[in-house]
Image 1 (cartoon, one colour):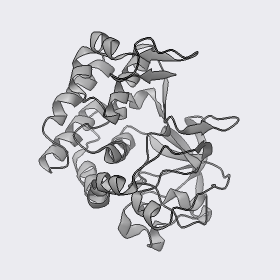
Image 2 (tube, one colour; image 1 turned 135 degrees about the horizontal axis):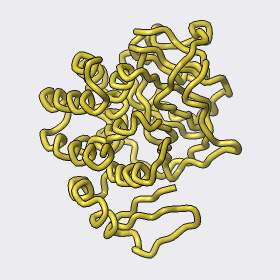
Image 3 (cartoon, helix red, strand yellow; image 1 turned 60 degrees about the vertical axis):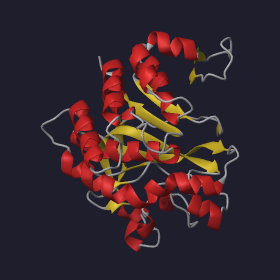
Length: 301
């Protein structure tokens, strides 16, 4: 496990089984990226990714400090035969395959919350050989939902155990950075944008990653809850303010990225092209490109 410290963390912090990267080590060993990333921003997790890549990792798993692993925690294999959706379904609510509760992932387009076309059923799935590039595992207890859900309902959720599923090309879900695994070929897509809000950064990452992954021959998979989230305290109104881009930009981002990426370009080229178009659309600021370049130079030698 890798923990990235901030300027308030004691330099001598230690924990068995953990590689701790202090603020001094961040700037010494990963200078350009460390200097480009803002302090007290979720995107500083990327220094941990870079450390893992430099150590030769073949899989990188994202986790949050309020997720408690269940016995047997882990992810399915990245290659195999899985239940898969059809292609080109657009945004689908993957939570609907694991619970009958009216609940949706953070970043799911609000216009589709009550749309029957956005709800999946097991009858729609067909076994298929798949190359999964990214696995998103669910979280029981207080799963990743938006502030609208928490302000209007806020019921806890325990998902039903079920077989994993894989989304077809053109079938999307927002996914988070809380219980998520990336395979080596897609490590560049771990990039967390820095010029957007805390509650939007990993959602935006997921919307960029999926069309790029499709063209590289990979899919996104969803698997049952393998952690219980005992959520840290949040101010739901502040979360709502931070999530406004999720509510207004999600579908537009997906359209922009899908129209921009090309089968003739590799992952890094498509990633760069996608963010360039998001700058043009005003979704991210022009300075995003400088940080992205620093990430690519460090993580994709």
